Length: 199
Image (cartoon, rainbow, N blue to C red; front, side, top):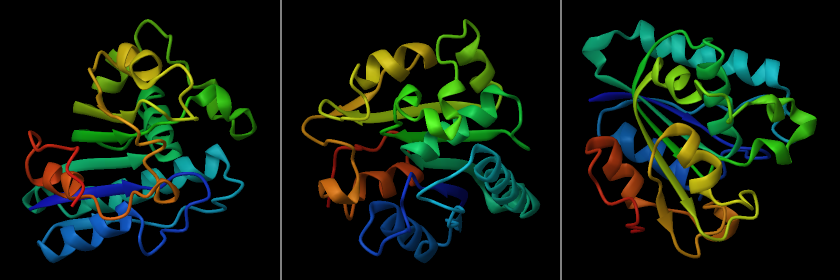
């Protein structure tokens, strides 16, 4: 069993066929403790509100105790940036064993959300993040409009992580056809699972 914190992205209302909703339901059926909260004002989020929600949900999973299993984060797009911001600022309430960052958006494309201040080029960025998560897994595609410089250049190098690149996956969102995603479900149970497996 694991404690899993799932964070959605911009304008996401936890739609019925989104891969994160499938993930939450599948993991709960397997007996995992899952937090998949709706973040406030998803169309016009503020950094302050999203940071507060992230920390509140993380604290609830911490209160469940280590007997409830390892602590895992799974984020998509802005949800990934929210997590990276908290980690790099030293503001997370606990340490995670693993984090799966799926299609994190280039923060410079989101200046109205303040998240553009996330400094991926800080010389200690990977060390700051590593203080709050033991292992980062990075997944993106080769055709993501939110990653014009590519996932390897934008996030892989700053984090010191070689990403899993899915060809033609776009932003790996429901709008891009990413509904049920078996690979992510498998990854929670086994960090060596093949994340490219769709169904």
